[in-house]
Image 1 (cartoon, rainbow, N blue to C red):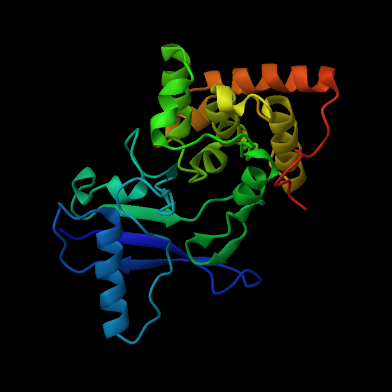
Image 2 (cartoon, rainbow, N blue to C red; image 1 turned 60 degrees about the vertical axis):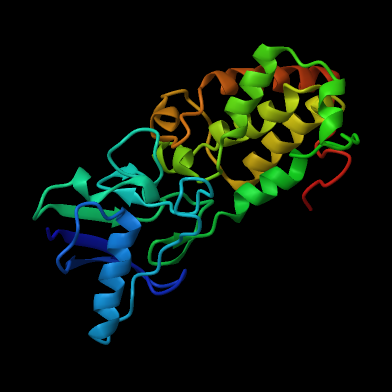
Amino acid sequence: MKVNLKVWRQKNPTSNGEFRTYTTPELNPNMSFLEMLDVVNEDLANKGEEPIAFDHDCREGICGTCSLVINGKPHGPHRGVATCQTYLRSFQDGDEIVVEPWRARPFPIIKDLVCDRKAFDRIQHAGGFISVRTGAAPDANSIPVPKENADLAMDAAQCIGCGACVAACKNASAMLFVAAKVSHLGLLPQGQPERYRRVKAMVDQMDHEGFGACTVTGSCEAVCPKEISLDFIARLNRDYAIALLKGEPKKAAAGGAG
């Protein structure tokens, strides 16, 4: 099969970008989307043209770096998968496929399909940590954790920080990401000492980075490759209200962002 790619090309953060169209070489329908881009880049290199820059790492749906908007939807047409888990069999021979980077002011484009998501790192640095000693692995059984809390914490911890929630949101809100990072620590006993300082510090950092407000449209949950629930945003809002009542400081005690 062959497809026509309409790809966003941008030389650097300060230059103007534009869409360029490429007809791919012959492709195997069982290729992943990233493998298809590899083939296209090899063809471009053989022609003496500059390859398309895009992010990738594990290619197993774990790291979250393979972040592309495909035909207007972050990560592509299917639910619960990252870009690297999207396959060409999802498209038809001769289809036009539009490929763009994340579109959000806090994620400035570096080149082509690569954007800078260090804003997420700074949010995590502001409060995504615990200060208590957890001991070695066998010590984990020494602190009882209700199964419901353990299951919810694991659900929240699945967030891979890809930023699809931001890319899909009309306000470029990062609330689903922050809610997941706040909740997976706040649900466990070890995360309690910083629980309210954590939520205050991470939300304040999110606002400082320029992410928009959450209006609960649900677009973030719909495109999340790990299907993180909107329920975690409700949990974050409750903890944030308590943090305000408690008068928690803006930054957490340790590891706060500068």
